[in-house]
Amino acid sequence: MSEAGIAGRVAVVTGGSRGLGRAIAVALGAAGAAVAVNYRTRSDAADEVVAEIERAGGRAVAIGADVSVADEVTRLFEQVRGALGPVQILVNNAGIGVILDLDEMTEAAFDETITANLKSAFLCTQAALPDMRAAGWGRIVNMSSAAARGGGIVGVHYNASKAGLEGMTRGYATRLAREGITVNAVAPGPIDTDMAEPLKRSGVADRIPVGRMGTAAEVGDAVLAVVRNGFITGQTLAINGGSALI
Image 1 (cartoon, one colour):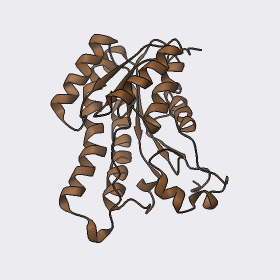
Image 2 (cartoon, one colour):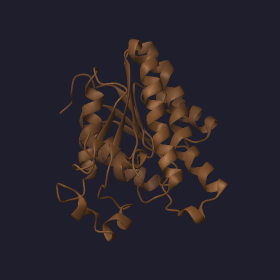
Image 3 (cartoon, rainbow, N blue to C red):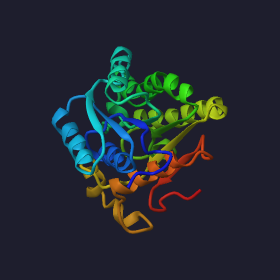
Image 4 (tube, rainbow, N blue to C red):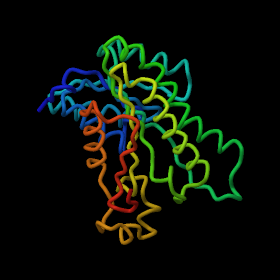
């Protein structure tokens, strides 16, 4: 069932071919948005997401682009506009999380993570703003992590990238609030996806107050909640089963 406020809007989900990105793209499609499913290398997986959205009666396209590269971001948004129309919803989900101890950390690994997780969100946000400003309406959701505010298991490179993303969220939110554009972050804790095997092996579910890991669909629902609400901006919504309480 489509929803007022989302129905008919064009959404871009970066890194939308699997895991959380897939769940978010499907949720937006079910709510009536036309969804551009961005991928970098997994074209077959992105096509499957598009097919799932279309089977449910929605509109979607898969577009490959490395969103950490400015020229590719420009091309991505041009293709989205040509295929679906102006972009009014952006979910910055693309990123990497290679587990590295302090003694394994290199400058190249640090730079790669900042570029993939933080710079990509900046480039896509800048590319989406003209459409959102023209419409006087926009929703930007940045996918952060519990690692932005805690130690986590991935590494300091990942901590820095996600903490920076939350800072950028607040900065954009402050500057865009009067233009009808909200900017928020969603910070999942332990979520049961194909990338969560190290967490599963560590027995993390036993340490979560609700007694289980979250699901990708629950994260998709959280993103929808933020997109629906025009009075929430500059906030980080934690999805962690009570692991950290504010």
